[in-house]
Structures are given as C-alpha cells and as structure tokens.
Image (cartoon, rainbow, N blue to C red; front, side):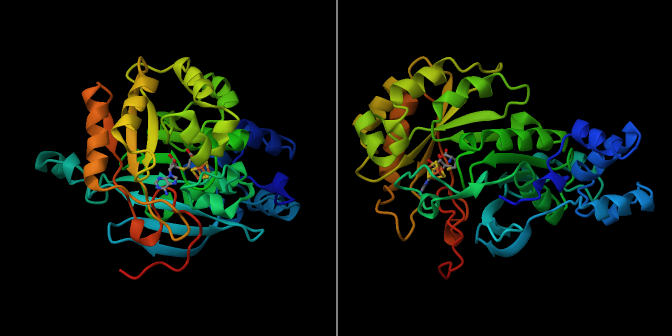
Length: 370
Ligand code: SAH
Ligand code: SF4
C-alpha cells in the first residue's frame, strides 16, 4: 500500500474534507468547495484550486496534501471502439480500466430533440469497467486476471480516480451523457469491500446514480447482508458460472468455501428495489458447463428468484485451457432458460481483439494484430 495515503484528498467525503480544513482553521464552506472541485470539476491538482486563496492552497500543498490521478501508461483501441487503459499508480502497480462506448447516441435522439440540444451536448452513452484490486486472489480457472494473483487492494482514491480520469479524457458531461459503471475489472470487489463501497459513494456524489452501477462478485457470501443494508447500494451481479457444486468447485475454487447452497440462500434473501432484478453471470465453457442438462440445473437453481442471466461466451486467452462454445450451443443454452421463464441475455464481447473483454484483463501489452 502507498504509505502516505493520509494526505490523499481523492476518495474523501465532504464531511472528511470539511473536518480536515476546519483543523486548518477554515470555515465549513471550504469543505464543500473542495468536494465540488474533486468530484464535479474533476480537478487533478491542488494548484488548480483557484476558488481557494493562494495562501491556503500553498499551505495544503506544503503540508503534503495532494490529488493523485492514475497515469495512463498505455491504451489500446479495439475495432469495436472499446478502449483498454493501462493505468499506473505511484508505487508502480497498475490496473486496467475499460471504456465502452455504446453506439453513437443516435438511438436517443430524434431530429426534434436534436435541435433543442446544443451541439456541445452529444448525449452519448458509455460504460466504464473499473478495477477494485490489482490482480485477484480468487483463482477462477477461466480468468486471465487470476494469473496475476493478488497484487494489492486499491485505495478509494485509486478506484474513484479511474472513473474521473476517463470522464475527463472523454469530456463526459454528467447529466447529459449517460454513463454506466461496472465493477467488473481486475479484482474481487467484495474482498476490498470498504474501499469499493467508499468509492461507490464518491461516484454517486460525482453524479452517477447507484442504479447505473453494478458490482459483480464471485460469491463472497458473508458480505451480502452488509451490502444489502448500505444506504448507497449499486446493483448486484453474481458470477454463477456453474450449475452444480462439483463443477463449480473445479472452475471456481471459492465454491469450496461458500457453495451453491450458501450462495443461493444469500441471493434469495437479498432485498431488491421495485423493478430491480439480480443478475447472474454465466461464462459458457465449451463441453464443460454448456450442455442442456447444465441449463436445466441453472433453471432449478434460479427458481423463484427475481433474476436475469447474462450469458458470456468464454473470452479466450493464451493461458486459458477452455474453449469458446459455438454460437449454436450458446443459443441453445439461452433458449432453455428463456423457455423456463428466465430472462437470459448474451453479453456482447467488447474489445476481445485488445484483451479488454470480461476475464481478459492481465495487463497484456502485446495485443494480436488485427
Ligand atoms: N471478480 C468479479 C468481477 C470481475 S470478473 C467476479 O468474478 O464477479 C467479471 C465477469 O467476467 C465475471 O462474471 C466472470 O465470471 C467473468 N469472466 C471471467 N473470466 C472470463 C472469461 N475468460 N470469459 C468470459 N467471462 C469471464
Ligand atoms: Fe477474480 Fe473475478 Fe477473475 Fe474470478 S473471475 S479470478 S473473482 S476477477
């Protein structure tokens, strides 16, 4: 962990900023100003904080306070418009954050609306996939991030910084452009729970509603009840990936700690908002978990739940010993779920050609030629 994290302003709440400034003899409104500067104006250095008197700014800087954004070490652009950013932190660690533009916004506008919107307000949609840890300790057999092992937890500022940096890079106008956040990059968010949640709160304060945030977990069951009770609670996605314990034990060793019964019990009592559903992700591995029997087992597991399933055909990687199923097998699996009344969607792979898709984040710098 970075040692001097106590001087990092990014990640702090308005109340924490206010107390920090009050300790410097400043009135409460300075806390509000600094909060606004961090999360709305996306200021990336204290010297740009011109709403503060120069003397105060300089004192904060000389005391060691700072605003640290991650640095873009490299970025890779996919044929489908997805961009994978390799972002570095002060101690040399790095993670990936992925920008996925969803179309060009054309579906949002008809000509009458377009005329009333200024040219500078493009009304874009995009999804940002962010990392909560560098690497991951969970060891899922189909996932390239697992091969990194756990490097370290990210701090709240490092999690928030990924998003603010991309919003800045793409000149996103919150309230005009439609941004979704998915905590589905490197790491298991529920194994860095406090920092993940703190970051989610700051991102809500930055104007991204919790209903547009989804956290995906491999099934860290003891966190479910706590998460359910949080005042700021993003949507929950559960990586199911197998239809019985024998299979899940093999491909997701975490299942030996919290098995399907424990996981489904926790899912069943998870309180949902009106119109909200749980999402279950299911990575399809050819000949391993994609048979009609597996689909029937998934149907049985999800019976009675307000849930939908996102099917993900395996995104391949050089060190991954599984095969992507054929489109026919994927479609047959999907149809079995739909026929049983379970909404099932196929997740479109984004940025597979640059190792940006689900399960491919392993800081690869050599990407295959198009
Ligand atoms: N650690 C969290 C979130 C990050 S992984 C979790 O596991 O839920 C995001 C999603 O990618 C998970 O649903 C995971 O099962 C899936 N995934 C992992 N490796 C994959 C691969 N090679 N192809 C397709 N999806 C994969
Ligand atoms: Fe970790 Fe998720 Fe990959 Fe499993 S799928 S190793 S939990 S990042």
